[in-house]
Length: 150
Length: 359
Image (cartoon, one colour):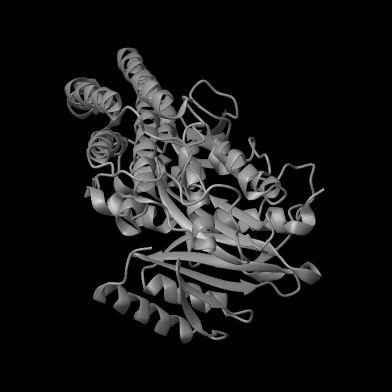
């Protein structure tokens, strides 16, 4: 990560201020790899609008399986020399799609739908993207980590 | 009356399998639908069942062309998690291998682009030059592809014969300057086939989140080597190459000039190569619980990794977002009103890597 310069610090502060005004926002923390916000009840459409206004670039969206069939959804942005990671989660296996606001999210959301069985409400075309047709959506839901080794 | 032509998944114009369903009226393209997934191997899932060392071997094989940058980005994410500081010599060697990789990747692409233009001679010339770069990679790492150079905390191999590598790279740069770059920037045939073809406007490039040379050719000035410098790029004075026309010619010229910049970076890194250890520690690294992201500039653009750990030797999540995953959808925006005969060249100009996209 680029070392903090005065300009870089200003961007980080501006971004944090914008994010904290999104409904459902929580504390924005500074980590080695950029800004992080963990906000399970985040209004993702409002978040996407704010990030678009800031002219942040969406790198991708990650899905991570958690309990009760839900999925952590992490939006990874880049604003100049700052990485910004916003973690939220699905509720009842669904979340609003940000694709109508941020076209770059299109395939990322389709992939999470395929692999984690998440419904992105309002996505213009939530068709199968990379999942082999013979496999049902959500086949990536088996956890990884130390408990997974067979 | 409009009709649909399937291009792929197996087609002479395609390096790797994906499908473009091209809707045409006469010889003019109306639109294109893109299907991917033919090379899906569930690598992320496999990586979440193997330990960090095994994962290095695994992620190297996401792609055959940009293999080293995958291990590099994986290592950077693991190093961020573990708080490992990579020694200086290793950071410079990482640049050398990454830029050699960019060189051979761009040369491969240039050859394919030449082939798609019907410019057989330049296809032969660029692939012959690429062989020289592969020889250098074999000298450095022991392999032409899948170099297995990166490890968590540094690099596995070392540069023992810097002079031999330097002279080979200098010779490559001279051939690029004398033959390859002038042909692709000035040759009338190349210009006629590529000027004004497959234009991607800056607005579309931003909307699709396009990265790498494809984005830079449309005036999107992003490059991880400048924006989030890693390895030794901050010390080497990296120069970004951009264009504004956004046509196939711009993407060609950007890659041609980037090859020169890569050669220069390798020469500089070899000349400035510091002494010292090549890795922070030996043995199995301890990766504590946590999560981290890492980015690097692969030949096709920004490569992104998200890594999560529960403190065991197996990661709980390995998320890989490759540049082609963002760039391939932008083919839709390049095709409207173009000629069907230009379709192979337009889709090739994005440098689509389906292994990377599908994983």
